[in-house]
Image 1 (tube, rainbow, N blue to C red):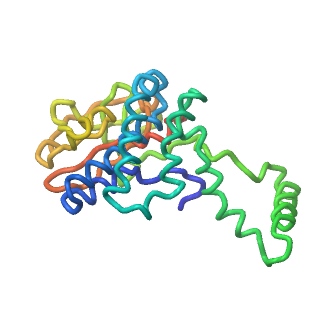
Image 2: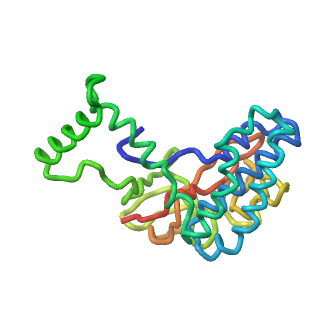
Length: 250
């Protein structure tokens, strides 16, 4: 992990990797979890509010069919808790990411490194934090939000999702101006059609042939909504946005 970057591979990555391996029933069941979570993670308040009831129905369907597909031992407390997260998103009127405990869980690895023995672990952590603040005069527990987005013309940092609803691949970075290949919508196909078409959550498939020869255009960094992923699949690629990390580029 590089610094405090909070980017993680979206759950749909696992959906693409098991397509053709799982049965159609199990694959569609998994997509219900993926789509519901993606809706609740979106930062677009209007879109999230308009689709929260659909996300709730998908999650109920997912939980209701767990025992049939995977057995009674699969239906533990955490599975039941999935029934209530749509209510949390609705009640707090924000993205699921904003009420998630993941940033704290992710930071536990840093706290664990402060412990040198089994005696009084909380006291050890508290003393190390105080020492750090005294030496550096900075808060030790920094916000998990990433204030600057790393962009480049190579690798995982080259795909972005624009506020216009299009994907782009960065070819050249020149200050606040980015030269990009912008994927036109007519070149993109839904990656799946059940339980809903994948373009509902801005997930698309593009063939290798269609990806070649796309003309470039300049965009401003402020045109970026969030970063994206381009994952190889079959004779093409799956494009999807990283919903949990909103663009705050500088």
